[in-house]
Length: 511
Picture 1 (cartoon, helix red, strand yellow):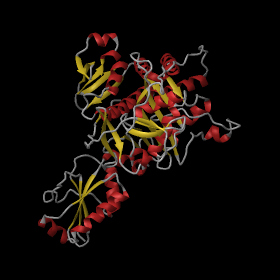
Picture 2 (cartoon, rainbow, N blue to C red; picture 1 turned 120 degrees about the vertical axis):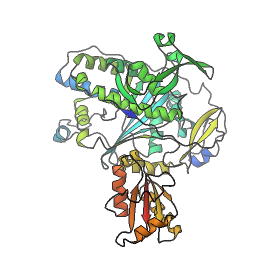
Picture 3 (cartoon, rainbow, N blue to C red; picture 1 turned 90 degrees about the horizontal axis):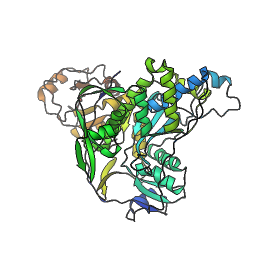
Picture 4 (cartoon, rainbow, N blue to C red; picture 1 turned 135 degrees about the vertical axis):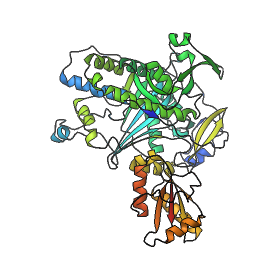
């Protein structure tokens, strides 16, 4: 299977200066956001330590149960917990109770299971570096029968509580390292608590993956296949490349470092592990930087997931054993695998519609204008605009879980009145966006007399919804038909009507 990638462009914002700070003070977010001028964190306060490999145990002869465990573990590594996840061990006195055997379930809260997936940077060029440049939350929403994968950008500026009770501000990709620096083993908890605050969910599980393991796993799979709609060119740090790629480097100099230029042609591409990582992690030449990268990471995760779950992989014991070894060395899980775990994992498709899904990036256009660009020491960050409680993000994220396919379709709609006062259009637009903020609605004024006459001759029709886009947006159209009470989406009269904003649909209200 190949994947087609289309990247949406976020809008630009103004800027203001902001610096990293670590301080003890009131946890009130509003106060902290108004008082961010402070000194840099002392590196001695946050010592950096290398992530240690998990050593492999002696291999034992595989039983059928152990084989199933390996399959479940590989799914976690390859899919990035997109379809399947490794859950907590069932904490019942009797793990073989009828419920555990016939209806195994993952842990959940408020009808959801949430998994935090982290890509940790522990490069050989800096073994102490533990930035989490990949932060993804996979949400399985049982009540809305949906799955949502959400990427939080590395440069999101955040306020958070450290393990010793003090308060700090930094980019989100540093939170894990600073938490570890204050108290070893508390990095995940520090970051997890913050992510819960941003998205208003409870994290049940996590998986921390070192990038070296990503390369090895894809190579063991024989590479992945992707499809690009257009050519993509970017640069990757030379020092992080293998000797073979370093020797053929097309150099590019940026911020005092040497990078190598890579071009991925349009069309079908087969990538080995190193090129897949380059494709997923490059960003300095991308038009929208880290936001483009976050979308490519989700794109690659889907491709890896399908390769792992292919018949060629699952029927090859040698590949499964090799992947299991890679998994043990490069992946840290919140919970270990068990028979009951695998049962719950395999039962997920019976709980939710895995095709009812959305891939989300928390970029500056998420939900409208909830984030803005700020600057600090020549770096660009994202800052959250609101009262510091992330309430607008909570609301918008809730609608995405409810209508993931409408979010993917991103419909735009303008509303026109014929026989009512133009001022009433704003009320209709507000009502529409309140009922579903995933629909971007505009107000307008009516100016095509010929169409007014044509509509007025039909007294039985008070609303018409006209389609201008060539794209298929069936879920948006279903919602619009229900909301406006019409039987169909029309293309009639479009030669007399103008979609002045380039919108997908024009709604005419004349009665």
